[in-house]
Amino acid sequence: MEKDYSIFKEPKKQVFQALGSAFRNFKYFLTRKYILPHKHNSKRLKRPHFQYSHIPQNVWDKFVNFRLSTEFERIRRQQQNKRAKDKWNHRLSKKGYAGLLDEICSETGLVETEVDRSVAWKHARKMKKCEYDLDVESVVKKIDAVEEKAKRKFKADARNDILASSIRKPATSGHM
Image (cartoon, rainbow, N blue to C red):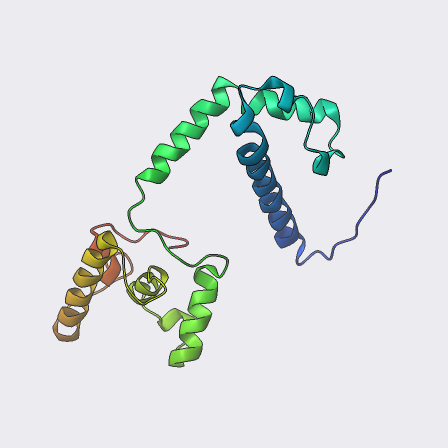
């Protein structure tokens, strides 16, 4: 039985992005909980967990076969290696940079475009007790030094702001 849902045109993109994200998370969950731990026990992989018995058998078989393939393993390793290189992980969770900027604006009274990227970067990487990881701490010290220098004579432009000079990477267009 097929169902149609009518969605207003304005939030349509956000709805489909949220659906795509939820679907990716669901596939990740199934892979981590029910496939990888039992990859050497084909009997456990024959059928989906009873909680997900609504998944058609042919779809489940295709999903399991792909998740156990060498192609998937190669892609997975490649992404794990890429993720391992990230040194300065943000701690924003679902709030994201948009929520953080809203928070900073409400606290300071600034407009979003007036918030310096380096301030947002530092806030995004604070741990619960307002501390930083060791890798982040060194960059925060550089940012603070450049901010101190900026009060006197630092010339910032669109590609060379305080954050860019602290992490020694020019700003890119788009999101942080």
